[in-house]
Image (cartoon, rainbow over all chains, first blue to last red; front, side, top):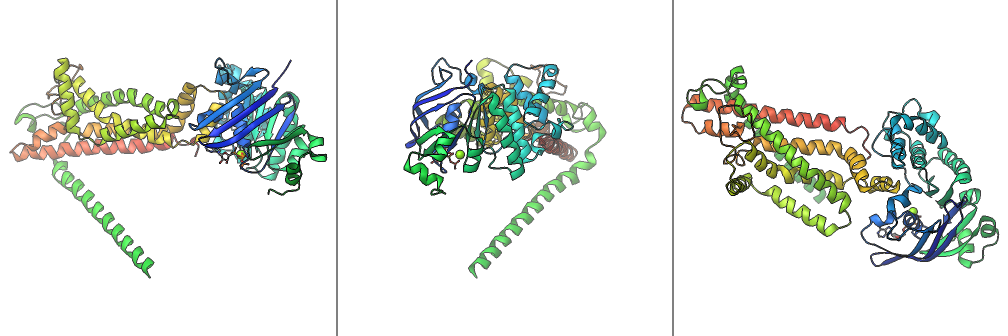
Amino acid sequence: MQRGKISIQNLNLHFGKHHILKDVNIEIPENQLTVILGPSGCGKTTLLKTLNRLVELDDMVKIDGKIFIDNEDIFHTSTDVTDIRRKMGLLSQRPSPLPMSIFKNVAYGLSLNGVRSKKQQIPLVEKNLREANLWDEVKHRLKDPAIKLSIGQQQRLCLARGLAVNPQIILADEPTSALDPISAKVIEQQFLELKQNYTVVMVTHVLRQARRLADYVVFMYLGEVIEQGPVHEFFENPKMEKTREYLKGAFN
Amino acid sequence: MWKKIEAQIFHGLMVLSVISLGVILFLIIFSIVYRGLPHLTWELVSQTPQGGFYIGRDGGLLNAIIGSLYLSAGAVILALMLSLPLAIAMNIHYRKNKKLVNSIRFVLDLLWGMPAIVYGAFGFTLMIFFGIKASLLAGIITIGLFILPILTRSMDEVMKNVPITLLEAAFSMGSTKAEVSFRVLIRQTLPGIVTAVLLGFGRGIGDVAAVLFTTGFSDNIPTSLTHQTATLPLAVFFQLGSPIEQVQNRAFATALLLTIIILLVSLASRYFGNRFKKSIIK
Ligand SMILES: Nc1ncnc2c1ncn2[C@@H]1O[C@H](COP(=O)(O)OP(=O)(O)OP(=O)(O)O)[C@@H](O)[C@H]1O
Ligand SMILES: [Mg+2]
């Protein structure tokens, strides 16, 4: 069974007059962790949001090119955008819990996936919270508003909520950048486990983090993909001059 | 040097305006309380008019109290049924169509600024056109139209300020627009929605011009939408117009009653607004 193979073909994206993504071609392998690297403003977040068509919420956006998820064209007119999004959980740069209790945040995700009765939800909420490594910290305060949690806990709650929708793919936009080092470690550990069962696409600025987590690396610069390949090849033996400069820290 | 003078000027202006606001507020409340309180009797709030100088002597104004409450509640329900979907559509469904949404905002602001008497005249025209007589229903429709822009724009303003990241989070999970609207947006903006509703209620209950031609007047408590009904502002209007001092005193008591109702509504709006705030995302 194929789960979450993503193929991006000749993707171009404009915000108004600005050409943000330029002829992007990427083959993201399934059941691996792909890291997208690149200096600030190169289009990493935009690329991630294009994968689940979230970028279309913006009124200035123009997209052409093709993206296939398990051979399904996500821009095809017969494709339901909510189906596409349900296949992908998105973890954003800053956690954004919904304005409801901890329990309901996760239950909301479950309900989108068709699990609507509270009786069915209770064990699944626990399962998803455990999967996100949050259960022990919140099991006594499930009725508390989600914003009362610490930022690190909120990020894990968002992960649990995303998992509740039962996606195949997890998109993560610098998921540890707003966190303290300890929470960051917890999330990182989480991703190492997640990649057993999900296709993960993660944006990061931190080269060491990329090295620790990635199976496959994509390097972008000013909206273009400069180089992509398996993690060892990419770090040990980069082919492009730009990549070598970046790895040396020239753009920071 | 200049900075210091500038700061002093603005400080002076601020003190001046705060003092004048305080004085005006005090004088308004004082004049109403001073003349109204001695006449604000239990009889006034518990009985319908029993004759004597028309609504000036015997009995009370229960007909107008109930009439005003029915009228404002009806108008708020009517306006809410139109304004909530409109505000949601402006901020979710047509979010990308900035031109359309901004034109709607512009029109609503115009309507908001229009004096109530214009709504009264419009309501009256509608009544003639459809052959409806002055009644509770005609008043509800007129006041409903009058507070519609108030409700819509107040809700729109809070919905506009919902962090885009929150909407993105909800959409990214695969929520439909309806799910985002009813399960996330409304929850997030509930304090604002409650405030908007109570603001509209307060404006509706206090206005006289919109009901002048549309509700008629009656000594009885209305029991049907087709009945004519008394309202508090109109009662004040009639009583103040009387040459008899006793009746004028009643006008102040009635005005005091109206003020108390509006005060209670404001307090309720604060209370509920705060209660719903606890899980709001900032
Ligand atoms: N909604 C938008 N409208 C117009 N331009 C945008 C919009 N969003 C992003 N951009 C522009 O697109 C470019 C890429 O932005 P993006 O957020 O994808 O960068 P990034 O690689 O994620 O950067 P960072 O590492 O700082 O998060 C930037 O130049 C940005 O200014
Ligand atoms: Mg980014």
